[in-house]
Length: 220
Image (cartoon, rainbow, N blue to C red; front, side, top):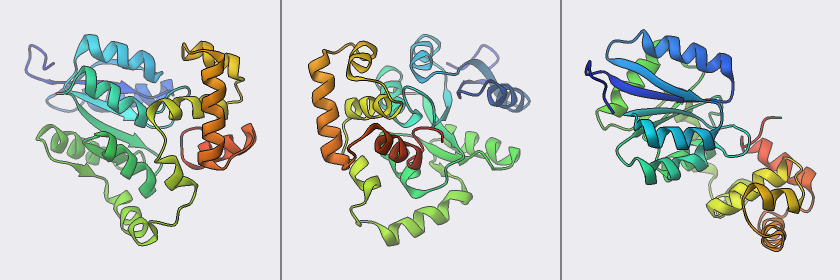
């Protein structure tokens, strides 16, 4: 929530500590904004965001375990008034489309100038959607190529739970490890693996990993 000085409370989520430190300096130097917390893991971030109730979350996409895109719904459920601005090196239409579909208020390229960060944050806090000009061309070009039925479009059909399992399998985890991390039975984890292989036409951990890297859910 807005702090006692009337400043917009911002929470940072990025798995790189140096990036978070840099973002904290940039945000704290802006008039009207203050950082109230940060986290390098999406699941940890969700728990802390629920307690802090920030006005705005700056959310990275590519993180281990749970991607920023999959964290959006959970943040929305816990703190529906919190604005969410995605920050990513990925400028393709797939990432922007998925982010906005899940409820992000804006999408900013990490390659943008610092001044654009302030512009995007203020626009989002006014209730305006903001998409970085660097990614707008990707949206236009992507619209011309949509409907090809490729792996990216198949990825959109996954449920949030399937996406969690997909990321863990892409990391090379066995069914038993997936079951333990997601608090499910081994049989359920196995069934999810079978469904994912069928839906994504990926029949090995290596193929799943390549797709996850291509879609920006894992780092190569």
